[in-house]
Image (cartoon, helix red, strand yellow):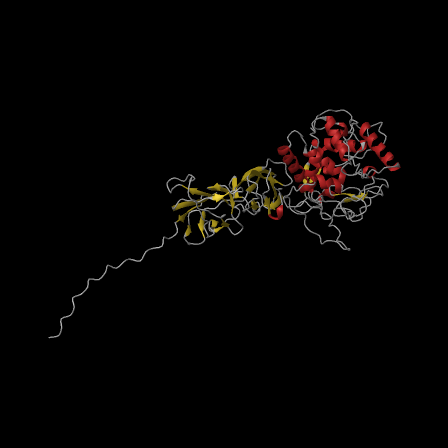
Length: 572
């Protein structure tokens, strides 16, 4: 690209001069930059006011390289416009794939936005020269970070550090980061994980392209509408010159592009103090590229290693087809989950993630959220957690522990970084229950009429063989084994006012499942009576209570008087 247009804009005298040249070139040559590709409106770029807030790039510098103009050196132009070759239409394979994937993902989740990949390509060209001519690895991550100048108010916006240097390495001021030049605070809101590696990386072209597309679509914009399009671009970088330059590339790419190997895209001019990357000392300048022989492809210059030296020459990575965008999350387990209060849910919310080709997607983060008026929680008391899919594309939520609040709630599963319809599961917490209850001793329970049963009645409730804590128990002195209604005579309990009651419903087992009944009293009736205890969950036991009158003293039996015997005969 010609040197006079191979610079980046800065505020000040340089900005005025370069911008004037660029605008004059566009106007005089009838450049494509003033045609709205989405609408076909061949009118000047509008002066739409950008949305409030900090632009994505913090008004950092940008390229003003113009695409090939159809009428260079047209009489009357204010500058000589260089002719350029078809190389400008070549977009590195991985970068191009990222733009197209972002368009497809947003078309599925926000079809009303109508964001075209050519617009993302235009912004990517203006912001970073298509990730430095496509110097990215097979996953789409730049070989070294792309950093804009320090946003310290000297020629650019003044933005204090917002990420503690995590993305830009600067803990004092922010710097725009990555091929789409996001400032860290904006990335914190709009960052995406478009390549499914579990990270939101502004230096990954897949992540950055999707984030840029979603940012442009914010506020229910329809980018097929001229005013919405202008507003979106100005929100990216508030500059009329920036708007016109992006629209120029947008129109150019809409007229036709082709794929080139990664690392062989047209590199930006870095020959001046105002050129990219001003202030970005971590970025290597590209070495001069020798003329290529017709029919051959030049090899990319290897990036510099930290600490000096260069990486051994490598063959550009082969062009690969990017993964299909994720289009679906589906239920892979039971739709309903049930547990007793205080217990763990035996079932887990399980989902499967698939892409547009219908294949399962591994290593995709999924967020599980517990929604509703409930105290059920994941481990650690969390209401939300993230887990990644396995090799088969499925992932199960961690175990949920039911709280004490009974009723229903929802477990919602959604794909992290994508706007897809979530999958929901219904969770139900039922009261604590016991499927068995028994007395802990076999001692016969007896009392005299009008007296108190001396023996304490202790019981143990269990559920599936384990102690059942907090289970409600009902105790009723029933009429008979066949008639479980409360008796109106015989043994009884006492209420708070010492009045006889023969049914208790406020009994609850302790942590060990044990329950000790209140004292039982006998009235004047004697005989054998029945006490039945039932639990939520179906546990039942019936106990006999005997009321026996005190023993009556017995009289010893009398012996009838003996018959006198005849006197003995005298001895002869």
